Amino acid sequence: MSKKRFFTGNGDNGTTGLLGEGRVSKNHLRIEALGCLDETSAALGFARSLTQDQHIAGLVLQIQRELYQLMAEVAATPENAGQFRSITAEHVRWLEQQADELSEEIELPREFIVPGDTVAGGAFSLARAICRRAERRVVELNEQEGLQNPHLIPYLNRLSSLCFVLELYETQVNNKTRPTLAKRRET
Image 1 (cartoon, rainbow, N blue to C red):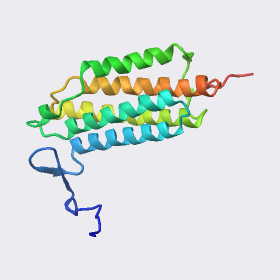
Image 2: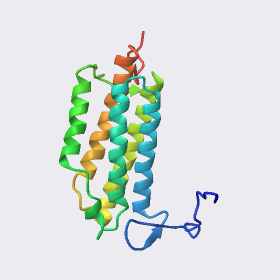
Image 3: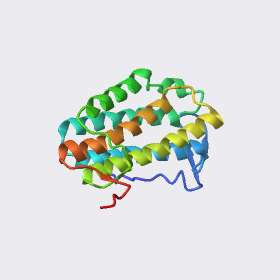
C-alpha cells in the first residue's frame, strides 16, 4: 500500500495554479480573495461546531457549501469562470430571507455591541468580520480584474449581515442573554 502525501511541492516557488491555464504568485489578489473566502468558511465551520441549534447548524453548512462554489468561480481564470458560475440572485435572496426570519426572533440593539457574550455568538462575530474582509478583497479583485458574476459581492454582503443576526440569535434566543453594549453606561 502506497503512502498518501498531502503536499506536491508545486508551490515551493511561490506560485499556485488557478482553475484554468497558468499559475500566479501566491500573493496575487485573486489568491488573497480566495484565502479570505476560505477563512470565512473555516470561521463559519467553527461557529457551526459550537451552536447547539440544529437548524442553525444546517443553515451554516449550506452556506459553507455555497462558499465552495463561490471560491471555484473566483479561482477560475476569466475564460473559464462561466463554467464555474453558480451563485445567483436567488442565493442572495435566500440569505436575505434567512436573516429576515431570524430577525423576527431577536431584538436589534440600538448601539454597537461587544462580541463574546456566548461562545457560538463570538464565533459568528468572528465569521462576520472575516466575511467583511473577504468582501473587500473580492470588491478589489472586481475593480482590478473584473468578475463576470454580479452576484458575488451582494452574496458576501448579505452573508456578513446574516452572521451578525446569527450572533444576536445565539445570544438572545439560544442563551437567553442580552448583548453587551460597546458604550458603557454610567450608573
